Image 1 (cartoon, rainbow, N blue to C red):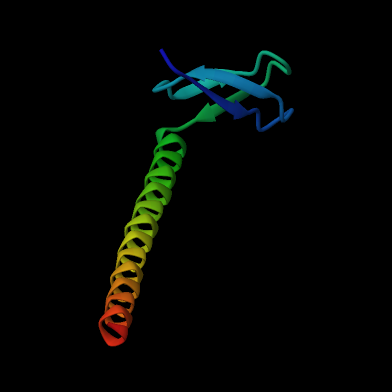
Image 2 (cartoon, helix red, strand yellow):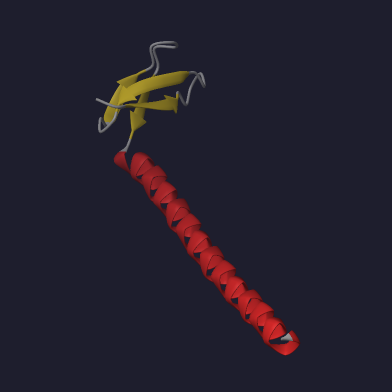
Length: 85
């Protein structure tokens, strides 16, 4: 099972929890209890998905612009060849 690393809200130490576990936990460093809720993990997943979508949009846009530039340069070079010969 995958692990999730979070910071204890009391001592700020890194605590590992099993992915998908939620509820009341005891910090192994300071022995204080803290609550870990599902929305914290879901928010980070949504954030990563948003970044991935944004990167895809940027990559597709860059590919389209690059393709358009190649076509324009090719057409220009083709025109110059026809003009000279």
